[in-house]
Length: 234
Image (tube, rainbow, N blue to C red; front, side, top):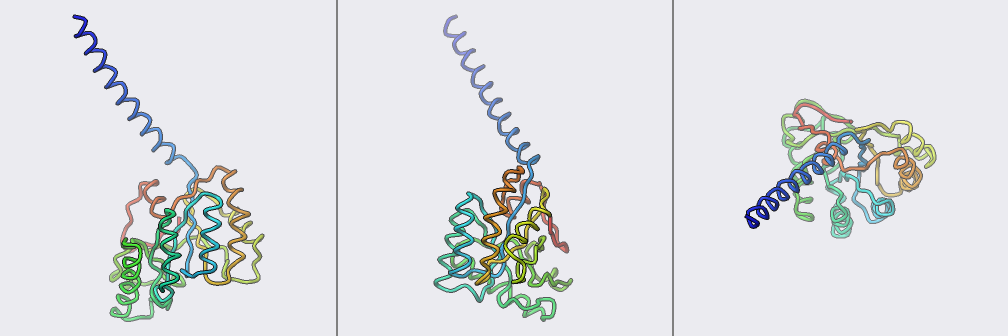
C-alpha cells in the first residue's frame, strides 16, 4: 500500500511539473507577444570599418540586428566581418549584387542580382537568406514574380544624408519608435554618425521597454507568415 501511495505521489508530481513547465512556456510566449518589439536593420555592407563599428555597438548594448548585404562588397576580408555578425546572432539577408535599381532590369538580370548574392552568403555563413530589401525600395511585379524572398522596406531616418547629425538621427529613432517597427539604417563605409546615434538611442529605447529582435525573429514573435506580392515596413 505504501509503495502504491509513493507511485501515485510520483505520477502526480510528474504531471504537475509538466503543467508548470507548459504554463511557464506559454507565459514566456505571451510576454514576447505583448512586449514592445523592434528590429534594427542595416544596408550596404559588409565592410571592415563601419560594419565592424556597428557590430561593436550592438555587442556593447547586448542586442542583435539584421544585415542586408550587397554581393559585390563581399570579399575575403569583409566575409570575416559577416561571419562575426552571424555568430553574434544577427541574420544576413540579400540587398542585391550591384545595388542597381532592380525594377529597371530584365528578368535574367533580376535573377542574377539575387542569385549571386545569395550564393555568396551561403558560401560564407552556410545559411540561405530569406529576406530581400530592394535598393532604393524600388520594386515592381516582375520582381515579385522572380524573387522568391520576403520583400522588406523599413522606416528610415535619412541616415544616408551627411548633414543629419548623430543627435538628430537618434531623436528620429526615438520619435518613430513603436511596437513592430523595423528601422532602416546603413552601415556603408564612413557612416559613423549612425554608429554614434545608436549609442544614444538604444539605452533610451531600452528604458522605454523596447526589446530588440532580428527581422526574422520579429516576424516569428508577431506570428506573421510572409506573403508574396507584399513589402513589409513594420
